[in-house]
Length: 480
Ligand code: 4AD
Ligand code: MG
Image (cartoon, rainbow, N blue to C red; front, top):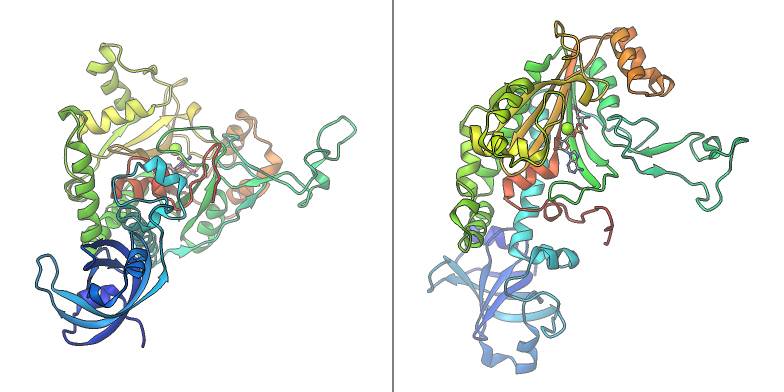
């Protein structure tokens, strides 16, 4: 007999039909009621067992997360909470569990513990909800851009250039690391490496994305990116996914409009299509907050927050305005900020969170940052005072997460770009092709990068970014 998925049964119950289902046991009450799930739905199917038909040894093996196949008849449910249940006629044990040895338990387990059991954690309600939503956000990304005429562009994972100029890259090499070939003056001779040059894992697909935008008009990338920063924050990964649209003829304002519309679309897609998963994640946070002090709780529930973000315009301010707001703030005056707030220093997470969570209480788009703290490719704004030069950069800041998007209008003027490349000590030869895009048929253009995991983190309300990627990679940890 062919297997039926639980989602199909719950959506259109064929009362009286005989079906076969396969899945994992969420709970087994009184040797009589099994809550079975197979991943197709957030919800479980109730299986009713006639325990007199089975010996005790067999029933013992049906425990938390055991895998079974059940054949039986669908009947209208007598109990509350479900419309249909399955009267088991035959139960086959596909993968039994010994609860004394199995490392997951049907009780509260910490996120840290579950991270160590990443081969089992997706079976929990929390993680299956998170990863269903992660899938759906990725799907919505492609749908959004495809519906609007953007082309999906695959940019390289191995590259010779450092797009962000931050020097936080993983080396890719086939050289013998214990005994690499050396040049006459003792440096590693990269010419003898696999690609005949020094290469890294990419930190961003943007520079290659620009090549495509200056030919196809509107493109986006969506791929893994790698950063060897030793940040142990709940918002940093060493391997994360980024979505980077790049658009010819766009300026910074078009860019901000696109970014705001795009993230609202992603959130809406989940609100409309994954209400059960969201309701569970919402309740999960509320339960966890029961023992917290009022000021530690979120100002609104997860679903309310998502709706709020979708329904309201993001606040748009300049970096200079942001600095003024921060310097007039209570935490600044009381010396509560750890990092300085001065024109020219980068906004730290504590500052971003103050702006978003306390001052505006909504997402904030900050633009026109000081040139000295931003990447070489960002377009210098015209008419700024000497020493106060700014670039057409924009960051979108979200509650709890801080920066979800970083982007800019690109410097399309060859002389200006070359100046910045020199000023930042970047080797011009590495970027010869990037410079040529400014010499031949160039145009104004802009784009941004959305941190995919930070977006999924915001939508699911998960506290740590390591819990929204199936197999997190971070400094000191690459299990699985
Ligand atoms: O602000 P970033 O560094 O911008 C770029 O890489 C540009 N090339 C994007 C562009 O203009 N095409 O990174 C973009 C986003 C950040 O806003 C953040 O959401 C995310 O990527 N991000 C990280 N997410 C997880 N872990 C990390 N270590 C991250 N670093 C950046
Ligand atoms: Mg950034």
